[in-house]
Image 1 (tube, one colour):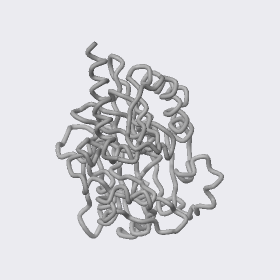
Image 2 (cartoon, rainbow, N blue to C red; image 1 turned 45 degrees about the horizontal axis):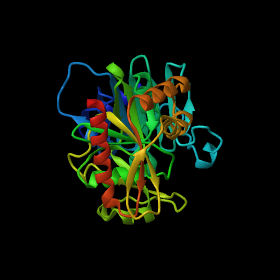
Image 3 (cartoon, rainbow, N blue to C red; image 1 turned 90 degrees about the vertical axis):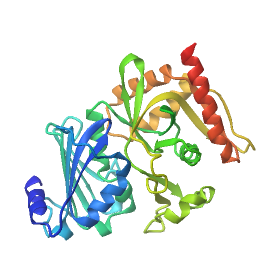
Amino acid sequence: MLTAFERAWTTRRSPGWQSLCTFAGRTARLRVAGDGLAQKIADAFRHLLERENPSGADLTIDLWDASDTSVPCPVSQEPVEPRQLSSNSYVEFGLILGSLADRFVGAQRPQVVAWLDRCERHLVGCVARHDQLSLYDRGKPLHFPLLLWHHDQGAEVIHAALISKNGEGVLLAGKGGAGKSTAALACLEAGFHYLGDDYIGLEACDHGTFVGHSLYSVTWFMADHLTRFPRLIPHAIYPERPEQEKTLVPLSQIFPGRLVSSARIHALVLPRVTGNSSARIRPASKGDALFALAPSSILLRPSSGARTLDKLARLAEQVPCYWLELGRNLNEVPDRVQELIELARLGREC
């Protein structure tokens, strides 16, 4: 794979795209051969791209487009049809070759093959045709290898949303449909910073504190739910097939400057959709918070279950926890979140 990438990089018809990127507070170097593929990668990670040029990198990512560069993938790229993935426990990740104990781990999805060398911290991948990538691969490129690399850095990726105001982060937890995306986007439109509403890297720091890290600059929404956020509708990218329910919305171009890479977590919030007219907050137990966080974060991610569960339990114990009942008026949600940030601040000062 590396030999093929170098051939694609040196024989490409147009200049390759290079950039630095921040993942989990660490520097990654990206090289992409193929203009169309480079644009899609840049769109997914735009809020994480850097201008500085540090001396070293914690991760190297090399990608090429076989069709644009005329350099085929040297390993099998037999199509992985969606029906073939139904028995795979990591159905969203595709076909996984390797385990948490292996140095080399591969991931194959339709149009994409990628391998991660965990010792050398080098990820190399090939895309058959960038213009035939699924909506999933456009919104979450290199999904499994990146989640595995975050695991190796002690920043396990959990299923949650994260927003922040003045550097104070609020983690929103709950199963699908609980209202994480709705609450996060309502706050984003009201001027909060946004780090994601699906995948967040969680890192434990000194003195019992925790930092959340952003991965992707997109959100996913059911088409009918987009009507609650009219500003997003002109930018929505709709699925290719009718059985695919969610639309993709790139956020970095809609809210320039409001997507950030990391934030310290000061509160844990459990959204819940209600039929009430107004939004309100109330205290939540540590057990409720852990139950909202743990199942999807452990069962559906490449992680050590015991290690991740322990980290989530420590997070729930360390920060104040609240229920956030979403009423019919979404304009009230940012005000309630601001209130709980102030409550959490008062609690730290006491």
